[in-house]
Length: 488
Ligand code: 4AD
Image (cartoon, rainbow, N blue to C red; front, side):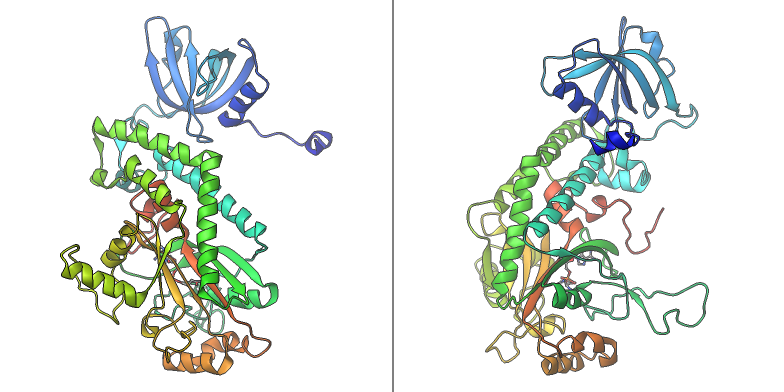
């Protein structure tokens, strides 16, 4: 390989790579190996001791066998070790080998007076986040989520590349509030009292406007970028900093183009995540945690965990062999009102035409269609941002937009066709009461060779929390930020 000719230093192998090597080369018992990891459990018997180590590269542990139980006296849970030993092949395919230890050394110990805080019992997500914000990535539950997220982003990138989308990197600091909702964080500099950029600047709430400019040159573009929202809503699906997946498509002149793109993307990545084994890992960790939880644990949100059974239902629901349901906002209101009249549902807030759908409405709607997702289209224009294209023939009453709703969570994706006419966009901005000078550059895109187009935005954490069956979006991002919370 090129690396060999250049004599580049290979990295110390992960436990996952080591296992692959043992299987691939069918290494016999007795082969010398060196492995590294953190101790998860220690079991001392009369004649032997067993120590399980892990390194987070996959959800398995490697069993170390000590012929003399006294050898493990210096070891403790959480300690990191380097071990020299020999391969002991096993018959089970799940664990193809263990290591008979010859010698080891402690790479990083754990002080006796301050024991390793990740106890070997069920710890709820809430407990892990609150008590162990930096240690939680070593837990089985957070490890599997982080690996799943990484693989999902890989699959998303693949899907876009295969469909001729160009990945772009729009800015995070902007001079406009894309959604016009006023939920922006302002960027200020500690070094100058006057505005650093000569005018007000914000952290982006959505890169859509810049993505539209990129689309005008590149046709199909996508990005995965942090987005920031100063929303004070403390809910299980809102973060102040989250990752938004956005795409924009030139010449898309039907909402169906964008809905099909979203449906195709999600179905494809789900299928591939299943094939990659990541889904199976999530399920097996769920089984383990459910068993552990039944033996007691720590944390007050223990009951909020989504069970393995519900998770399987979710995935099956999304992958059914029928297209996801599409209904208009008007139909959605009628369905909700009828359900309440007929006693099939009871909402805290009655659904009224002209009002936004509440999260309880969204969740109920999504649970109605064989537990699959549902697209709700063409909302009244006053509920949506200025940039959306009015539905032809509606006199501006509704816009060409959709929300994708999923059971238990509600809104997962928002998308629309964009207004591409210069004068009509200018008028929409004025009508929304936005200072037109802020968006001059954006409106001007419609001056030169404007094209019909559309796109969508999906919160990556919402998708992850839905797919791994973790209740709160705070637990699928590494360092969550929400109002009054910005620790470490
Ligand atoms: O529906 P939203 O506000 O749409 C936009 O920002 C469009 N400009 C996107 C576009 O068309 N390019 O947000 C899109 C998605 C939501 O459906 C949700 O999944 C997620 O972003 N989202 C959040 N996720 C976590 N925390 C928050 N505070 C979120 N706000 C929105």
